[in-house]
Image (cartoon, rainbow, N blue to C red; front, side, top):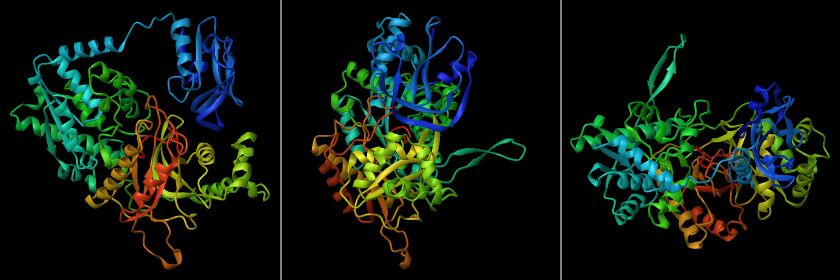
Length: 594
């Protein structure tokens, strides 16, 4: 009895079927057809909305199995009812698969015969028991950001251990939001948690780490990274920040006349953190999407030494919130928007030079065809055929309708961002869209789903507010993690979140990263004006599981006037060129841009 969740290919191949790579790849939300007489799909409609992310596809179905789900011409599910074996090529475990819980319930209760007697309270007791067994009479230093994960972790430690065993430390890394550290300290004191606040901004700005390199003989060696305030690599940023947290924690332990080897380090690490970082704790086969600050090489070394306590490592964000309520934490803290450990550092897109590869001109031409599809079909072009081969007739009809009604232009922006395509890390382009008319958000959301499906070198699609972009930027404003750059982003973040709170819609949005990009629009190329301004992106995100999610559609999940007010206020900040709105779902984009 088995459910091969999210990967029917492996099961099919093991039992004698074949798998191969097709020209068309599916990353995103699609409607598929189901055989709802199959036990796995009992109670579902014949058409269901699911999340598909894969590069390879089932070709020949294995003997004894039958095709029970289809996405266009691609097999999306196989079943051998007599052996109670099922494989699905989509993800029933995520919120973007509308009836995924029904599928899992069918498998767990009706097929596998499980019972639902294991509760969050059971898990809480198991966490407390594990903490007591591992820590004994030793001390634990817990790094507290003030977010739900680290606060729930601290509440568990306080429930399991004596108060004098728990050392709670909030490290201000210099990348916090406006007045964040002060409000974190006040909120934790109200909970009865005495927290030591350490200002370590200088140590982080100048922090380094060791990174692996190999010589011609493939002998592993190490190199020292650039300092954090000089690096443009998102992976290096994350690793430096994670390792610096550990170094500062060890300094705090030393100041208290304790020995680091005798003190455990506690973190609010969640399972998705470990999966995205490809940690062996979660999976030995996963691709690194991004290294989380709580899973760097230094943390892994401490973990091997048995010095790390991570009571939430098997939890997801929604489960942690339920656990927080069980522990009696206040709702305003439990429901708080997540804020990443590296803070604003991964919300500044650092760059010294534009990202323009050989595929830049061709991709730009494809985007021109898409944005003016109704006119393009009258002028045959080899790239037009490529667009048609990657889209259905229904897609093409919708494109005709949109481009007949709205005057749009689409173009590549010369910067990189992190995405996830085919379950693998992608680090590539952003597509910008601007329009003569007021934005028609449903049409823009459709284009944001379609474009990465056609162009796998595009992770993200943004709408650029303001007049049509006549000359997209082809260079960048040199940008690093300097205090001035961070101050600009901090103010933009403050304005946007203040407006969201005042609107009463903060509870409808799961998370809202605000990103600073090194892009200066509206420069006449003939005047050769240097790139010296930057642009801001508003990234609204709606999710139930924090593994996948969608952008909020203005006029639907968030009022358009709220978004426009954010744009107006952010534009007043000195040095801001334009404001953009991220339209992308996760996948192919990630929640954060880095």
